[in-house]
Image (spheres, rainbow, N blue to C red):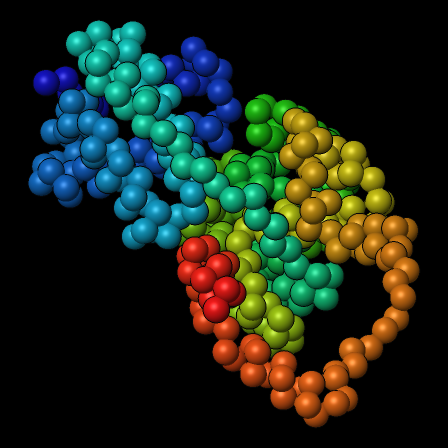
Length: 355
């Protein structure tokens, strides 16, 4: 049996950042996946996490974990596939480092991804965004922090990892006029910020506690804000904003919905999908086409430009003669089901006609 812990540590600490030069966001995502997988396997096999072996993670256990993520944790199929991608990457690494596990690695990598539906994205209207940004209490330190996080996430269309990893060095020359973002796929972009966003950032930096963490946004303990912590604060403020905008109660507002809302409002303001892709840092404009499908204004423009075909107006006129109405009613009731379906014996039908 091959111990899992040393190989998993080498994969996350050396292989990904040093040999593959992947972004810190990717390493964090993979680490989150394996934290869930190791806990699941330890509970299932009744062992300590440090006692687990690579051979324990056969395709059966991997499938059980993916089902658990989708059913018990309520993850979407896309999140399920992202977990599987991280597991596949680790077993691709194991193929060359542990030849004895080659057959197991090939079988795990053969676990299929799950097909997903291409659904419309969720986003908030301008009125809902305004209510959400006004929800945090600016008179408290945590409310000042939350307002700055929400403003920056919406204004820049930032992913959660991009937002929570920001440091003061990401603001060129200590000015808050622009922010330097390292996004998905190590793609960099520099975004200008509204004056309102700069103001709420200055308000937070003025009350931010001194600590060793370089990240701008900290939790109540003075440690870097986590994904779960941001999601919890967002849900709290959504509930507050729903008192002014009840339509928020019918929407599932996640941190990524702030990014979608920024994209939809940018598309409505500019009408140019290329500018949306530039602002969000998409690698391909195909990723941005999802906002075109969700934009109702685009469909209304198509409808008005195309025009409906002209048809002759008319109105149904039922038979006026009572005798015809009676005969039609009897005819419709007397026909047996086989005759209605066109399934009957031709020979018997011919005999009935001859008689």
